[in-house]
Length: 256
Ligand code: PGA
Image (tube, rainbow, N blue to C red):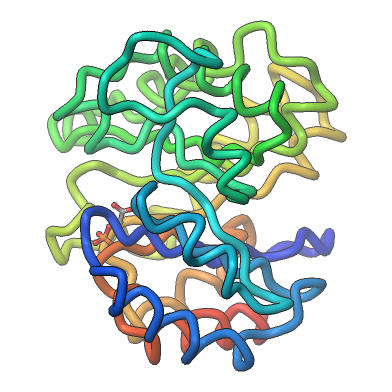
């Protein structure tokens, strides 16, 4: 982890998993056991329909996030949730541009940018997801792809707001596949991401911004990832569905 005391982030991405009862059982189990919020930001990104239920039961140190939202305040968009609805449900974070949204729901860098503006306008902390496909990695285009995603995502975002964005670097080929980037590879790429943020906004913002790794993070590789110089935490899908794992991830974040 970093030397500049960026607060680490452990964010669970539940995707389309958990019923109401399962969600309640999870939050009751972890509420009292996660580290203090001043030491680790422990976030559950849940399906929209469960947000308010979880917010009502969240303990002192757990925070709730949405997995997506529309960028408009309201409108005829059947099945979507607006930033205002996410906000009034009590969610404090929102995943933006997750690769599953990009590949199954036609999200583009441009809609990601609009959503980032909307989150900032409504004071919801965005967790901006970026990542390269396997062929892009293999043909040496990772940096170009990520730079492009960042340039468009941050278009017309003010530096003071950019510093509050959490970036999650998730190589698409590592999500749900059991293939993790090696800790060194993840760290090198995250350093490049930080360099790009520096090029866009200067050193102060690039040193403040938290950059997470995501993609097949498990309890047996979390520590080697967090031990890296530039990895400020993790966005975890499958392995975060188990409350004991989630607690283990938050505990690991205290160690570095
Ligand atoms: P995974 O998912 O941990 O199951 O690979 C990560 C993510 O999609 O955010």
